Image 1 (spheres, one colour):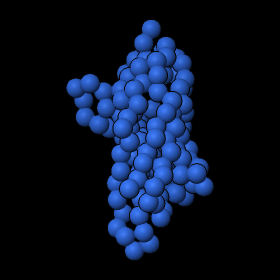
Image 2 (cartoon, one colour):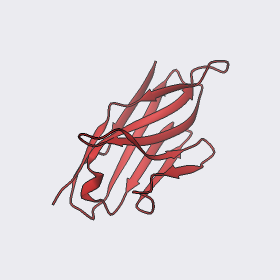
Image 3 (cartoon, helix red, strand yellow):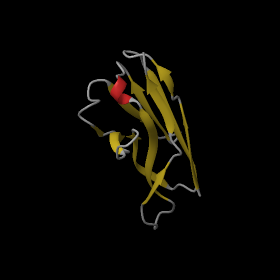
Length: 121
């Protein structure tokens, strides 16, 4: 069993900043990729940013240069610093981890419950 606890969502004006955090705990042997996805009303869930255990990152074009993903491997945490937020960043943001529950176990994919980010003037 894995738990993902997300925090840091909220409401902010355009141009403002928010920092999302996600803590993973439970039956985890190792975590490969940690990431953030988002889903706006009426749209499909999309990748925002992801980071591997080695620190390689991948960003959606729409957030590149404004958002920064980071992780603390010792704490099994991932962060998303969001700067210069825009109306179109409004969505539910989901934490995602790809992990192994054991040394000989297959990699699994797990989602958090989501946290709302609203950018409004």
